[in-house]
Image 1: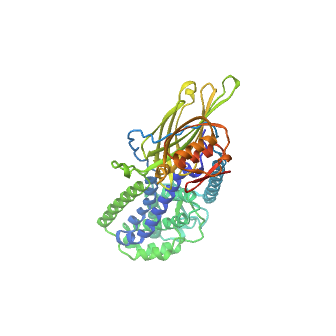
Image 2 (image 1 turned 90 degrees about the vertical axis):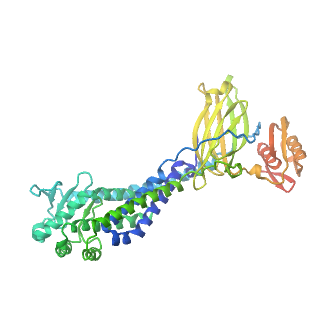
Image 3 (image 1 turned 30 degrees about the vertical axis):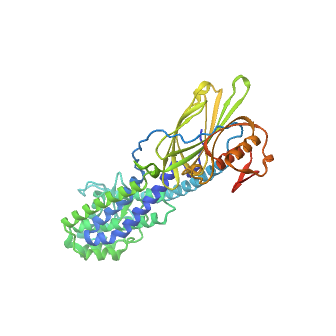
Length: 510
C-alpha cells in the first residue's frame, strides 16, 4: 500500500480548488447584486447566487486526458547497497493532515447539528398546529398555536406554509391574500431548496467568513426577489404589503430550511424596494441572458484555471520537465532466506509523456502530469519480470514536488516483495548543472571508496576525505550523468552526505 502526505492527496488539491472557486463566486455575487437589482430587478439579481455553484462545479469537472508522445528515457543509475529513504516525514505529514481533517469534520458536524437542532425546535412547536383544508393552494397550510410562528414556508422536499395563531385577527383580508401569495411564491420558486443548499455550503465552509456573509446576504436577496415576484401581480397593493410587513413580529425563532416573513431581514431595504416600479419582462429577459453568459464565462475561466499544465504541442525546449528520483528494493524470501536487490533510478521526462524504465528485474512506464499549487499526478505502471512477475502494479498517485511517497507490493505467492520510494522534482536539476563534467561509468562490486575515487578522476573532482566512505561493495551504472549528481548518489548509498564546494568534495554524516 502507499502512504501519501495529506497535502499530496488528490482530494486535498480538489478541496483547495473548491475553496478558491467558492470564494471567487461569492465575491462576484457580492459585487454585482446591487447593480443587477437596480437594472434588471430583484428576481434576476437573486439568480446570481447560482454563480458560486457554477464555479464550484467547474473546479471539480474532470479535464480531458492529455495525449502522450513517445516514451523518453533520459538516464538510469543502478546501485546495490543502501536502503530506502525513511518514511518518518511522510508519516508525520499524514498524521498532521488527518488532524486537520478531523478539525474540519468536527466544525462541519457542529454547524450541521446546530442547524438541525434549530429546525427541529421550530417543527416541534408545530406539533399541535391545525391543518387548513379550504385554502385552495397546492401546498398544505398549517395554523400554529403560537403568535410568533409564521408566516413562513417550512422545508424543501415536502414544503408547507405556516400561519400564526392570530393570522385572521392581525391581518385584514387584503393583507392575508398578500401574505399567502408571498409564501406561495416562495414554494413555487423552490426557495426551500435554496435555503437547504445554502445551509449545506455554510456547514462545509464553516471556517470561511464569506460563507456566513453569503448565507445572510442570500436570505436577504431571497426575500427581496419574492417581494418583487408578488408585486408583479399585486402592484397596486404596495401600501398594504408594507403594512403587513410592519405587523409581522420580529421574535420568530430561527428557521434554517425555510423562509420566514419577518423583519429579521432589513425592513428599510424591503420598504424602499416597494417604492420602485416593477422591472419590465423584456429587461428581466435581458438580465437572465447576461447572467447566463456570465455563468458560462465564469465556468470556463475556473475550469481553465484548474486544468493541469499542458506540454506544448511543438518545441522540445518549451516542454515542461520533471525529474523522478526512484529507489526500488526487491526482496526474495524463498527457501527461508532473504535476498535483497536494491536499485536507484533517476528519470527526467516531459510533462504528460511516459518515461520508460527498463531494468533486469522490472520495467514499466511512469507519466507525470502537473497540477496547480505545486502538486503532480503520477501514473505508475511497474512490471516485475522473472520469478517476481506477480508483484507488478498499476497506480495513480498524487505528490507534491520535493516530497517522497512510497509504494509497496507482493507477488501472488508471497515470496517476492518490492518497495518503491519516489520523489518528483521540478525541471531536470541534474541535466541543468552547467559546467559540470558528465560521466559514463560502470562499476560492479567495488568498494564505495574506490567508486568515489574513480568517479572523482573522471569528473575532475577532488576528494577531501575519501576515508570517510566504507569499503562495502557496490555496483553503479552511470549513463551521461553529471559528476556531482553521481557523487551525491554514491555518498547516499554509503550512508554519507556529499558536500561539494567548487571542485572539492567532502563527505559528512547526514
